[in-house]
Length: 443
Image (cartoon, rainbow, N blue to C red):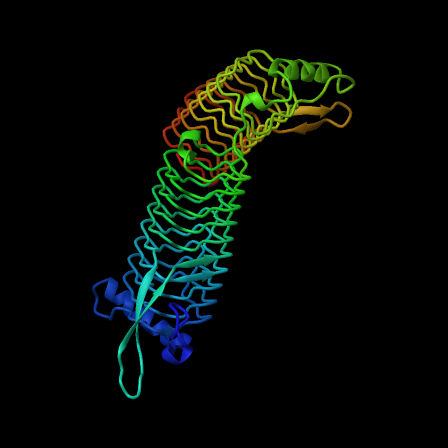
């Protein structure tokens, strides 16, 4: 018996591009209430055809074969794509809000920038005609939605229903999966770097080897989830939320008690290393350690390796962090007033609610002879609600950073890269933004 979206080709009617174009034209008239006819393309073969930038909202594609089809920029809002084969199809920028994608197959599908808010990707039951000695009974075939090796960066899957879905080996980096329903879903070996999974239901989910670096997992449910071998470096999640999850060989925040020496000893050795320019002492590497609420006021952490470190509510007032690697670090609510962060790497770091008043984030000259400079990198950093009053951000890289509701009063953003940054609700009174790159920034 055929299985789900892998229905035999003999059951499908092959459409030409001309026939599809005619159906699209009639459907456009139908949507505009100017006559026409709703597109009903059930069990049709649309392989390799061009549906890009067309409006197929409310259309019915049940059981269709659309492998290799071009659907980029198309609108499929409330569309019925039940049991559809979208393998190797291009859905980049497509709008599938509220679409029914139960039992669909998306192997190698491109979903970059696609919108799938409240889409239904649960398993489905497709009804197929059978044939037994002249009899034509109805057979039922249960199919689990399969999304494998798909590329779906920055996709919007807010509230999507994906219970029991197979989402293996996919790249969902920077996608929004807020309140997504993923109980018992298989996300093994997928990449979810920087994903927003707040309030997501991952009860019983299989996430073996899943990369969750820098993901926002606040209030997500992980009851009985299998996170064996998963990488949660820099992920925002409380240990309590992972209490019943399987974490064998997973990369999670390490306790300060696991340090090889006392923290103060390590920091003093690093300060010696920094002051002697590496001739004595040792450069500190605190990757993945939980240093939340530590008092590091005025400490010299220049060029320290602090990737994925937890510094929640830590006091770093007046500290020296020039050239430090703070990628994926969680500095939520930290005190960084007057801190020297010139040339620091804060890519994907979380600084939500942090105080960076008068912080130095302008380029650091690293070669006096060649005038070589290193910019402060805050690419995709989370700075919502942060206090950046009078901060010096000249030339800083803030592309795709979240600066919503941040206080940038009197800040110097001259020459900064704010492309794609989120500035909704930000206070910009008295700030300098001369020569700043603001393409795609939202205000």
